[in-house]
Amino acid sequence: MIAEAMSYEERLRNYQLATELLKRKLRTSYVSQLIKSISLSEIRDMHRAIHQGESPSSGLLPAIEAIPQVRESMLYLSLFASLYRHASQADIKTEMDVPAIMVAWDFFCGTFPNHIRERRPYGKVRPANFSEAWVVAQALKIGLADLHYCRGCHGDTLVIYNSKFPPSCQICVLDSLRKRHSAQDCDLTQKLSLQRLGNCI
Image (cartoon, rainbow, N blue to C red; front, side, top):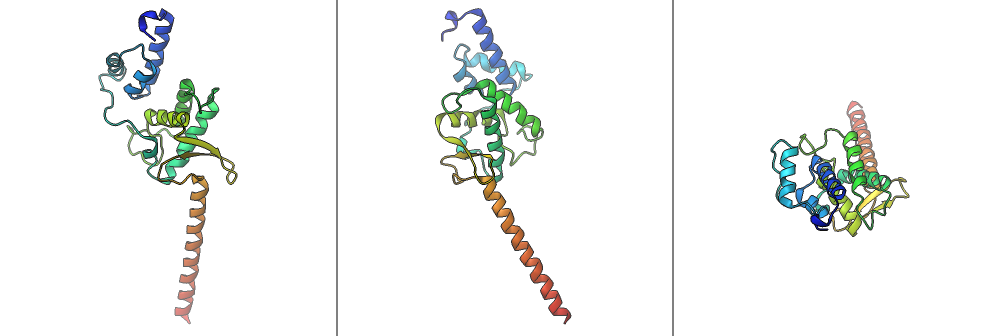
């Protein structure tokens, strides 16, 4: 939509939306893709004004399949995706619900206040910034990821296609691994106890 053809109220809403997205440090290229009535250079200027002269992030945009580096990250990504779906009144498989992404992100940040990339150390808790959260929502819309209900743990699980993790519930996989390690630790304890007993005889 060309800016000259827009009403004052529409332009104002676009600036308000851009401000809210930039406050959360969404990459300026994503803001520019969403709000075409504001130039990329002006969006970058807005970012600097909001963040006391700090330049916008540069470099490669995050890819959905590269965000989870460890299995535990899938738990948090599943939680964020579930929050987003519950916050949205739209079909997240066909459109991105921008207000719902912000609501889900703000709640997620309130739940994990020290996980954000700028507040090191961060690690397993992903998304680690609002751009990663945006990419999760984008992936759900374009079919690079999906949110499934798990009959095993009765929770939502995010499946990221073409990632290094198989399309199964990572919560159940982690629980199974934990039980296996616990059983192995128990067997080792029993063997050590028997060995000590044998040494005493």
